[in-house]
Image (cartoon, rainbow, N blue to C red):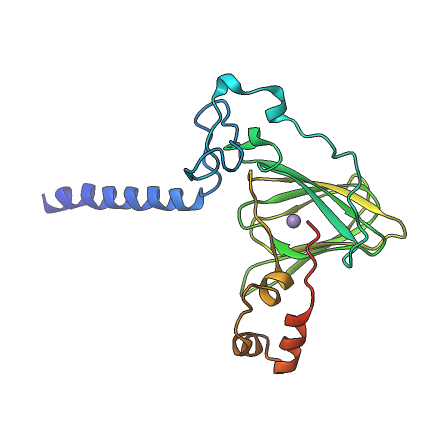
Length: 229
Ligand code: MN
């Protein structure tokens, strides 16, 4: 009798735990609760929500789902020799709540899209032109580099949150497009984030973390950390 009384309670507790676990691992952009939720422009509301406040559907037009200009190459004349042109919810209000976005990436010869992560989105990259050395690094403790050389037509995936890069190793320019699984995937450029924060991270913190001399960290903190976005 006691067994009969306890087992359902244990099963219920297990089910609750399983549900909680499922909830945790399915954390991504929330599902859309209507056909669309076009973003209001900044200053059109003082209310903040998770995502953007929806425009009245009756006022929505085709232009709320439209972006023009991705046929144009980005300016790669900066020190990294690369330029990311994002098309996310900031550019297309109609992407609000839909969990996707896009980017065009241009690379000069030897141009680099430096090691970075997207905290909220996985990325699928298709090379349109040129030859790219790409890679990402798996989590601690493995820290394994997964890397490949890509040519036109090749597709590669960068899992959410992992540090990744693309380097143009061809003789000419390169062009790629990337789909991202968030309306606002976010961007952390590792060098900029660690050495170019405002205010700077305490010198002793970085010196100990990177196991180098103070001067090396000071030198890195003095660099102008170029943003290719
Ligand atoms: Mn990326």
